[in-house]
Image (cartoon, rainbow, N blue to C red; front, top):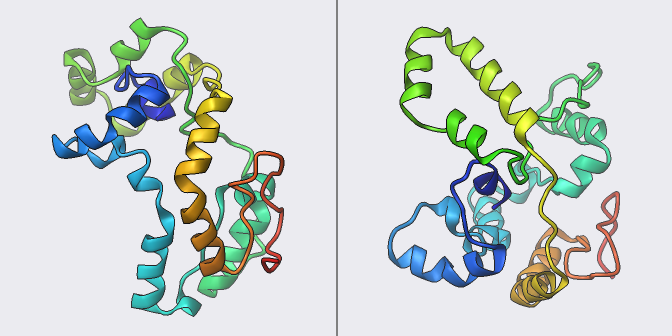
Length: 189
């Protein structure tokens, strides 16, 4: 949602977009607009476990990655059997989301004739660097999610979160408004 707002591709409030989701699905909108549907992780992860075996799937919670990115990247390296003693650069923030500071600039660097022309004359790497630089400077703070919307989402995902925690054998902290996800992976109570 935040990335679509940043790119001027979503003009609805989060609540209105949630209300519109089923209609968008029925109208064959892209999956990127299926905010709730694409956030149901339990069944998707279960399919991976069933297909490849639990021991061959490494799940990382975003909150764990944010809390300790180096440990999480090293855990991936160990999981796939490669060295983990590199100096990982995890301080660079990329692909941030948030409301654009300037709608005009957001539209100017989005898909249009000017950017199509720029792609045809600039080396790809330089074009990506320029667009990334402009987007980074134009991305403002994330829009706050009202508590009523948070409560709605907690209700929507309550069963999903419980099932996911059971599947993963750990707490996520996602359904509890008073807690944040645990830093590491304790077994569920």
